[in-house]
Image (cartoon, rainbow, N blue to C red; front, side, top):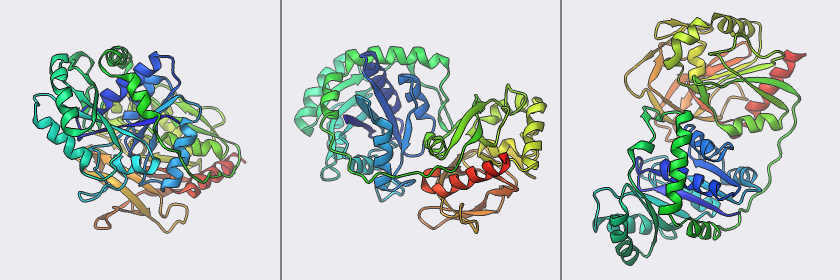
Length: 437
């Protein structure tokens, strides 16, 4: 399988822009392209999907062991001509300040995948070679094969390319010029979720990359990827159930492997909009309310009383529901004073700062919840986040109470990664089957 990791010198260097440009250029060539994202981000994969037309998925070495990560990557990219994997933060950044665990470098090493590094070269000259050489040589067998410069003109790139190659022993395989017209807007969670306008920007990026990046050379480098050696993982079928997942502008943050795991267990995933629809899809056996930006649509969500009433009555009657982050806020009493479903005695408000951030693992007296891993990243918080579980940071130095368990509903701020604890997904499916029967 040809595959390539697009890493970066650090956050904000332009990884997503360059990655999407390459994806679009490969797609324009008629290649069957797949994409993935290192780490827990759920917005960058949305941009990948807009570029190539199929879902991008997360490959995360905190959520899963290396064997499962390789199995999932192989399953995802099987049949594609090439898989492009976008890195996370800086190339060596990991779970803590002093290690590479679960970062881009670890992923490249575990999956035997060559890497190309994106460096923001705006305003840089000879010192740029020192930076690139430092990154490439920081770890023995770094896996870095080439570099792409971002935010430079053709003239500057032609001047820097021979110097970089002479000083670093790395190839400079292209550049992306600065173009404010195709930049992606940002919000506190990272990039703003892609709108239809992004399609036009991606088209421009793809055409630009074909001219400024050596796509042929990237394909050759991707062809040097080693074998993915893994033991296949079997998922047991639980039963057939219809799961309604919220999917619209307010709720769109999901780990795609969560849905894939549920489908393997027998779930029929259907989508609905808490913004536009008046009721859950007919025959629903369970509900998933994912994360997103419900605070941006609080008034419209609050005004859609038929949907709020339908969800509240269904949950109180015992219909299984998984609600995380934005979905949990939707089930609270209110978001910024706008009335919501009122299942939980909590009200969501903007704290004006990052409330909690990073990987967590849940500790719980409930066996199917105990040990599942997830991620938190939110500026909005509630005055009562529940206490059914304890969230533990990987370092073990911090913890806090979280999560509600109400009848057959599990809700809280953490975005849970079901593959880290398949029994969690299986228990949810069993509850949905029990509800159906």
